[in-house]
Length: 177
Ligand code: MG
Image 1 (cartoon, helix red, strand yellow):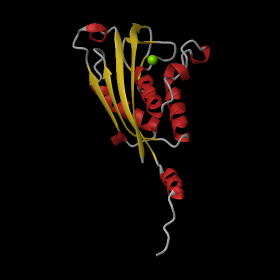
Image 2 (spheres, rainbow, N blue to C red):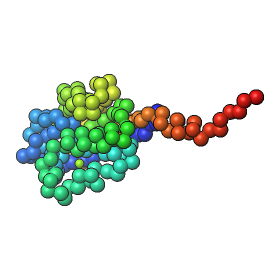
Image 3 (cartoon, rainbow, N blue to C red):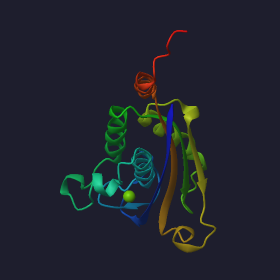
């Protein structure tokens, strides 16, 4: 197996009048994240981690926030399209570890739902995904509840059997005696 690791980070501003969507899950709150798309900071960080692991650039290259096609876009599409690209290249997700930074709302009650949503979107079992929640300790833009941030780390793997057979073809054939 060949392994690659990728990391992703995203932050979006919190404001009234927007739905709060994290990891594809709508979370009841009086504020939501502001962005060109649905502003799902979790899915954006995970998508960036996948792109990074596969050496495919970043989410801004793939889905520019100046493109009207992505106005109000469902970020689950960004993730599933990116996963399909990786699968075509032979990559499969081994595991994902996500940390969400939010002073409010409290994410303890919804962590499990976000985890299940991510596992479903990535088509991996639940134990391959972990979701952690941190506050901002009431300092900085996270701690003042002005924004929510996410950090994601993903490991991907690809079988290299075809490469091994290519190498063996170039090896000298042992001679008898
Ligand atoms: Mg974003």
